Image 1 (cartoon, each protein chain N blue to C red):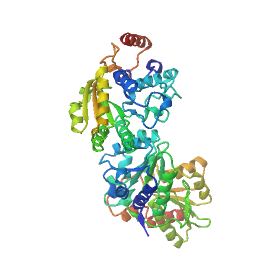
Image 2 (image 1 turned 45 degrees about the vertical axis):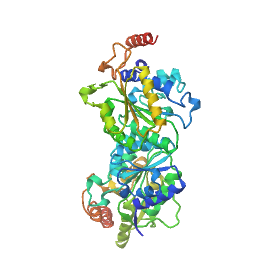
Image 3 (image 1 turned 30 degrees about the horizontal axis):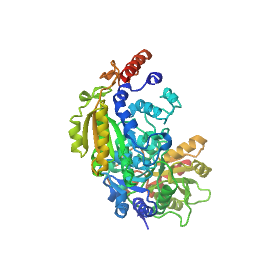
Image 4 (image 1 turned 120 degrees about the horizontal axis):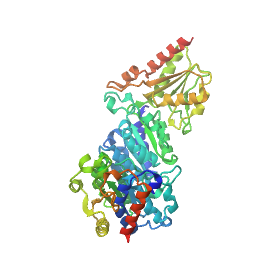
Length: 314
Length: 259
């Protein structure tokens, strides 16, 4: 069953609220869209509607955290991270124990167009010391991540969620290993190693099936944590690969592609890296799947680009 | 302190010092000494973070920091950062210095304390130039919605900012009318008159304890560089520190006035 990660978030939050009275939730007039309304309906005394004023919401959440609360503040990723200076000083520098939930990630939201698409949010948040940056690939992983963020993580964190439904990919019963890459589609000595994050993972899985039909083996890994990033596994799985591919519905500047490039550069890994994602462009209106095609991150587009690259190297 | 650091903001520290002294030595509860801090204590957020030398002087006097540390202000490795840092020095409650953010954080503190049914008050000092920032007005709009009678904003209205007089750079008047219209209980005082200052603080607490639903805004008219003849109302002293001869003269004048 497929489900949007924002929906899984809202459900998990409402559930965690039962056992964690310290959780409070703030939203900036988007509770219906971010799904924080599921918590609001159940715990109206612990939900604060802050109106269309994100910077004030962010600072208020920091203050609440200093009294021992665990605030979740929610909006679209682009609107939250657009209030960068407030996040930088009131939250990150102050090491406020705040969970920032940015929904409507990437071009996948479709018709609303550029102004509503979070496309640089990971990049911006990764640059802040103490900030954890996470992006689950499906509903189940969102549940695990929420549990981790409530029970274990200390300090500020940013979580990036999708508007659109994503297929179930999380292996049944698999333990959640915070910060670690997880293999989603294995292959013995794969020619290509693909690392995806968020909505990119399902597309990568689709691409691996298409490539298999063309005689190209590609393993698929999921990165739910962009910071801290699992350099160790990245370098390990890249060994022997002809090509490493990253797939993300986010700018290739500062996102997953950059995480992998940085890991490679620091340790001298020599696999060529193909960074698929939004290539230093603005978003635009359209159907989500069509935009995935146009920007080269649909299963078909990934498969075509990988096959072309492998053909070149032969 | 500032002369030793060779940079900082003397004008805005001196305009705030009377308000801060009255607050920390007479009004705030639960901050008598660093050993007695409880969750019931009053909180103070210095939103105009550049005025922090005045706060450091008070914190040193109260034993939160060592008097000998005052001379390390702004130096590498010092606890005394150029602007408040709650990680290095938790008693400052919020990290500030980019103007316009402190009132939101203070509001969050007030909301949390209210949820926990604490009686404590949260005081937040802003500069008048600072309220040119849009985020301040977001907070001004939301605090009355949440009926935060435990929140007190103190405006150090010294009519000075880096590029000139506030009323020239970007006029903000009528200040009292604006905050009243946003739903605050406004008290206007002379920010260097101890009687008026203490009366305003005590009025804010009485209102809170008697079940008022409004946050309080104290509009304190102050003089930039107060107490030092050559600094008073001279915008040039916003972010310029006195040379050691000037510092000596300034301290002499302040000492004499204190007698």
